[in-house]
Length: 148
Image (cartoon, rainbow, N blue to C red; front, side):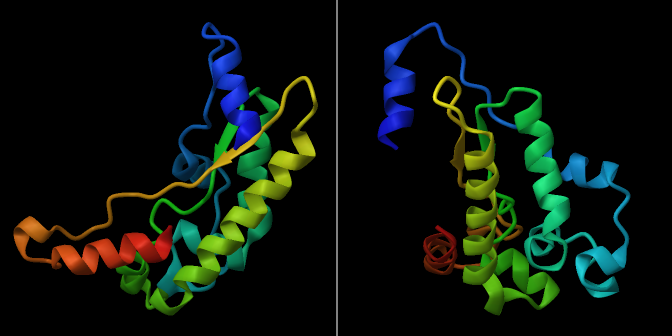
């Protein structure tokens, strides 16, 4: 974190580039249901850190190779609320930890003293809204705390 703060404070004109559309990058790989861990898990990109980590590594590498400074963990939908739609809510911690470890390893592999690389945790909005009665505010807060 200190190295990142130093980078953003050292040169106000320096643009720090984050990665882009991870989901689209997975679609470009033409993954099939077996890559996701079965037909019931197809489309659960977050489970790829367990079922097909090479696909996730490939996306991270592609972004770093084109010059991104920061890659995001493959955890946009890795809250227990979203993972429950696939029956994976019990794997929330495992998926988030594995995704962070994987991204950190790849970022480290691409880091140099001249161009350090960083990882940011990705947390999406879930698929439930307290305002529509899908979930209580406390349940939503708990799922975000668990994911973070």
